Amino acid sequence: MKYTHIVFDIDGTLLDNENAVLSSLQDVLRKVLAKEFLKDELRFVIGITSEIALAQLGIEDLEHAKQLWLDYYPNYADSIFVYNGIADCLKLLHEQGYVLGILTSKTALEYQKEFAPLGLSQYFDVVVCADDTIEHKPNPGPMLEFLKQAKAEANSTLYIGDTVHDMHCAQEAGADFVLALWGCKSPELVSTSRRLSSPAELNVLLSEATD
Image 1 (cartoon, helix red, strand yellow):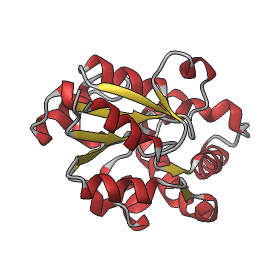
Image 2: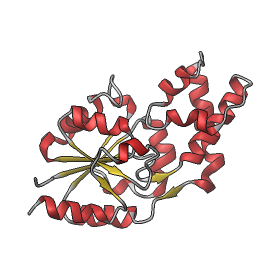
Image 3: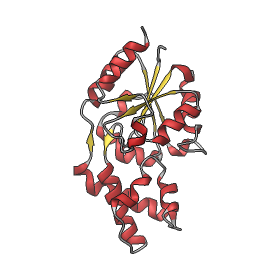
Image 4: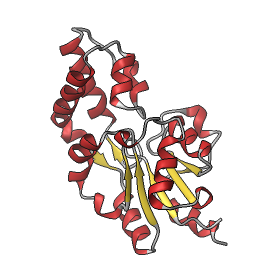
């Protein structure tokens, strides 16, 4: 299968930002609920929208809590990194003519504040954020929206992500999925998915797909 469109998740796929996400959420919960949570108790929020995550934690004033989370996140900027090899991978894919996209559970505002300043946005032709769909990962809605915006066929689209939410979103929309091992924290997912050990392996996978 020759792929024409390559789509990436952000958190845990392009960015190593788990500490920033969870530490800033701890600050929000400390402020709003006056409760302490361990990071292990909060790891379920990775891959879902901030609104859904906060609602599941029992917060009523979601808009206030979302703004606090956005405000606290930059306090942990020193712990946020683009994964090794990602920038080179994106540059090469762009030069090779692939249409590149992002499919994220971040809102457009979160995307602009948390991801755009890192200098990778130039490579992406289509960005689908949480605001763009009624359904969110793991539902197929976000991928279907990407296919619509990009005028792409599902069977020529590959989604790279690190969670089971990413996998279901892609597969239920008819797109292919490959697991980014460098950000994956789900051992059970490793044994059930096509996977990449490093961003550099993506070019090998794409070359094999055209043989």
